[in-house]
Figure 1: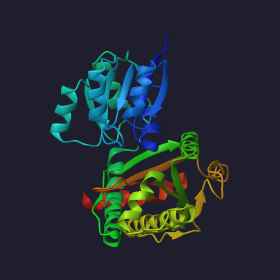
Figure 2: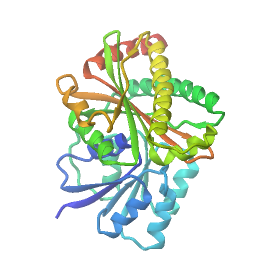
Figure 3: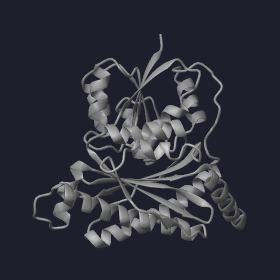
Length: 330
């Protein structure tokens, strides 16, 4: 009988990346949850003998989920996978019943080692399809700088404090990208804008997604008193996308000595089916570099996700530029 594995993370890319890191020959059935409340419901339904749990999530975070598992005496093995590397975070999750803690970004070898350590997994061979650590670290650093510039731009315009988590950098196959976009398409509580970019041999698409539940608080921040109809939501979404996409691409381009030009933005789900994005790019998107940025605003229920997707051909050019940066530091 296969083992039931539940992956709980509010990040679209992170859920797929964790699933990708599971040993390919491991007999498991994989389920997904976007936040703790959904995870608890699935655990009660018998899904999730093993729970791979993120910490920072809306509605019910990882700590609250662990508390609910303990209080409701739910039988599951929990491994926390999070970018929060504070010693207190490690101690808290262990005290709440997690068997171990893995730092994001997760890689297949580390996940296997943890599962073997706790006798959840028998020894299997893992094929590492992740980015080399040094290159991944470079992508994270240049994206972190660009993300900070975009956050600063947004903060100044809206007069708020923008929360900036660690960027997620992952390699995903075209099938995983298709699943990710279908997830967006099936989620009627998210509005999304897609915008292509190209320059210096580098090309890709930027996806900016704003939770529909965020529009009310965005209206408060902007002192909008009129009714928030579809047209107003569209205007807010386009403005946010313009700021975040434009500033992030400019920041990344400057660090890599690239001038990235942006195409016409497209509202996904309203004027074009999300899956068309994949159909139009199947020939150029085989393995894709996905950089995911998640913005929040302190004191408000606002969640905006930006995903930058670079083609495989673009990665070769970008990796060379990053390699020169590493050589300069040596």
